[in-house]
Image 1 (tube, rainbow over the protein chains, first blue to last red):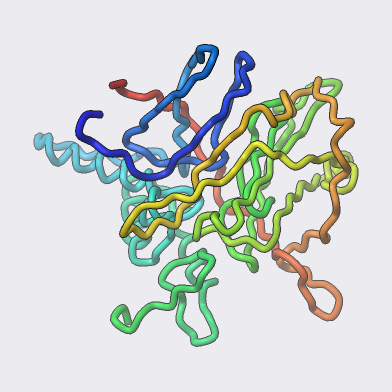
Image 2: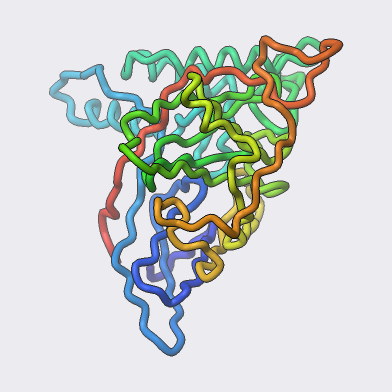
Length: 157
Length: 177
């Protein structure tokens, strides 16, 4: 893309020269755009297909907003899409950079999930997980699960 | 369940992804019904297990790399992960750190994959696993409600996941430039 720079995660595949090679990444990726560059040597490469597999919590839209205001209708769709992009086996603040379940973000995601999808299982899971994060000082962490225990800072209390 | 991740295949079909993220005191295992994927005669149950070590995502805790599959009936105990499982180290994947300036990036690394080292069709019925070695038993899996001798626990405390399996839907690229 002219004048644009791609940053972020890079995956590289070194072909073995056989026909019909198939590969799926181990973990899922989050992308609005994808840049593909191909380097060949003595023989050409045949690329049959490149596609994604939407991977996420199986929310199903149940709520409907009926209005003459097209912008408002679109907003509901955008909200659903954001919530779905940030919901796997936990809620996440962002599926690209952090993938972490913060209690503050989860509160809003919980409301959206219940109103739109009528499914509270991920909400219950988030509340239980925050409870499990309680440490010796008595505070629950600001996010959980995580490798490090993030105790809320004074300004959050 | 696995530490850190697994993909479970029955006769080459992906039937379960996991585990749902938890912590060491609440490590999820996924219930999975294999019946619809089995057929009369020979079947191949195969799992891909990976752990991206220090480069793995911040939200995915790890103790050590392992995989547990356990049947819930007398007959399905044949599937239990013990030394009857054959395994091999997959040497095709290399994690690639993601570097972005002034950014808090703690999701998973990229992947460098060298296809030449991949055992071909390893999930299929026709695959010959003669070269593969018996799996090693690290410890017995402990359900959360059960503790060992003197109340000790030596690994993950397992709980049944309360969440459904993730949706997997083919998503085409909308536009090519």
